[in-house]
Each structure stands twice: as C-alpha cells, then as structure tokens.
Image (tube, rainbow, N blue to C red):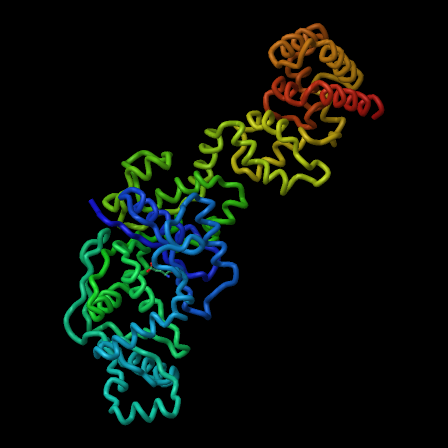
Length: 490
Ligand code: GLU
C-alpha cells in the first residue's frame, strides 16, 4: 500500500482544460484520497509563448465544479508555495538548478543558432542518422566560451545525456520501459529567454515538493527517460511513475470536438451534472470491476487503485455520458433538481418570465424529472408553467372527432368543475374530471387532450392532473377561459 502519498496535477495554462487533462487531475486526486495523501496543483507556465489568458481560471474552475479540492496549490498555498512556476522562476530556483548541473558536468551552454540546428537536422534526416547528434558546443574551450559570453551570443542550456547504456522506467501501469540512451538528444533545460523548459522545472519541482508518484498521461512517457536522467544527475531519488492510457474517440482517432468532446466548462454550460461527468471520466481508463458503471464518489475513493488502470486506450463515448447524465438527473431529490435547473432558467428563459418563483419551481421539478436529459432542457420543458399567456394554436385544441363548439363547451365544463373542486389535489380532481368527460360523451383522450393543450399549449406534457395541481387553480381557470375564447372567436 503506497505511503506518504503526495501527487500533483501540473497543468499548463494553454487553454480551457479538456476531459483528458481533468481525467489526470481526477485520477491523482482519487489516488491521494484513497491513500490518505496530499493532492497538489502546480501550474506549469514557463512556456510563455503558449500561455492563454484566462486558462488558469478555467482550470481551477473546472476542478472546483467537479469537486476536486486541492490540498496545496494556487489560492490555498501550502508549505512549498508558490505553486506557479513563473513565480518560482523569479526566485531563481531553476537557474540555480541549471548552474548546479553545469558545475557537475551534466549540462552545458549551447550557442548554436536555431537556423544552424535546423540545417543539421535536415541533413541527418536525409542521411537517416539515428544516433545522437554530437553538439559542437560540448567541445568548446574555456577561452571560446568566454568570448561567446562577452559578445552576448544567445545561448540555451542543454542537458548532457549519457552517450551509452539504457534508461529504464518501472512504470506502475505500463511495466518496464527501456530506452537506448544514444538515441536521446541533449535536450534544452534553459531556453534563450532564460526560462526553464518543462523538463527541468517539472523535475526540480517534483523533487522540492516531495512528490511521491507522478501519474500523468501516456503522452509524457517519452519525456520520462530525460526526467530519470535529470534526477540521477542531481542525485535525487526519482518519484514513482505511472502513465495513464490515452483517450480516443469511438473510431479510435485522437479525441476531438468531432467526437463531441469539449472543454469541461462547456459540459457544465451544456447542462451536464458534475457528478455525472466525474463518474463518466473515472471510467476512462479505470474500472471498479467488469460491470459497474454508476457509482458514488465514496465507492470511487475507497476503491481507486493503479492496478485497475488499463493499459489500452480508453474510448470516449458521448452517448454514454448523455445516458449517465440522465441517470444522475433522475436520482436527484426534486428539491435539488430545482436548484440545479435554476441557473439555466435564469440564463435562458425570456427576461419577462424572471425572476423564477423558487417555491413554484420546486413543485415543477418532479414533473419534468423523467424527461430532462441535460439541464439546458429545463427552460423549454418548463416554460409554460411561467408564461402569463400561452401562444397556442386554436386548431390544436380541437381533438379528433370533435369540433370547435364542442371543444369550447368541454373547456367550459372543465372550468366549472375545477372552480367547484374543494382543492386542486390531483387525485380527486382527476376523478371529477373523468366523470365530466364521461357525461359529455367524450373519450378521455379527447377531453384530456383538449384540456392539456389549453393549459400547457402543448400536445405532450407531464402527467396532466399533477400539472393542473402545480399550475394552481387561478392559472388553470384563466388558461381554460383564454383557450375557449380563442376558439369561440376564431
Ligand atoms: N505541464 C504538463 C502538462 O501540461 C505536465 C506533465 C506532467 O504531469 O509531468 O500536462
């Protein structure tokens, strides 16, 4: 059983996070919770060119919305603050580390221009050279270095990878993976702008922050031998590594918008419940057993382990997410459903129907619970409850086998029965309206069809008598009257 667990989610703020990014956060968080460890958020923003404004806020908001609380990181800080690499850079942490490597002979300044290197690469490609390029800057004399420095020649710092042997990672998910060192390049650790690259900052911080397990997406596996060599050059014990499977679309292509995948915050805005998305995401590469799909957060926390993280790619299926959202929506207490629907009503109902009466909404919610698939359905499913006047086409009031005068008479009889009813409780109301229909010689389909259209403006609605009860006597009577008038006048 893993001990002293400290794991991190290390996003780069290069855009609004997608399912894949946040799946990494979720797995790390579950791992920390399962083993009583710490979950850390560290922002890797040293690639200044790729920064996107607002991305960090979106990352933190995605985590908050999904209930993934971080123990250390932005906003909450912690013993290793700051947790934002650009701020750590200002403290000289990475420069200092690079100097240490240069002193120890594990890194060197390289003055080659990007154009020169591009030319070399092209030649090597043409000649199909597989082995490592020997950087001439490795062999510069001290005198020549001084001259280059004195003339302010731009430079980067490169890590000097061992030229022989192999680097092996014992991956907790993928098993043993080995690389021949001679095919690994001397990678940059400090760029010409003085900022560290991902590799350096990542390793330095994982060490300083005492990260026990690096759990990240499979795309980072090729970086791992570099990281292992960095740890070794520093004389640090590396953390344990686990690379999580890729996420592909049902056609096994890289996940994209085409598969319905969008940023996490877009799912929120499209009316998905965070608990449904979380449950959906946990199954992208992990399983409880061979069958369980819907499970509580407690079940995930108590059972999450790397042993059940799969090696093959996980398949993202938007239909499954939709289905799962429906399951979670139907499980909500009606009161809770009303609260979840409220922001969507406030966002999408016409302004003249606002503000929403929340007591009324709580009574409406159970009526639409069976039919709602995403919270964005709420305005359309409930609008007629709030409208002062319905825009209904008189022709739809007249049911098969009836005519306009007969329909007007039926609506008037219904009005009388409803005004005389002792209450709007749906059961007695149903009984009395059934007998009115029978007295009029109308089938339930005819009589209730006319009633439904008159009070909801629609030909399909939640159960009619519950709807009448929730609408309340005043609204129902007014709507019946308006419908009869429209029909009589039309
Ligand atoms: N900053 C990297 C990213 O954007 C982190 C990779 C890692 O976890 O080491 O995903």
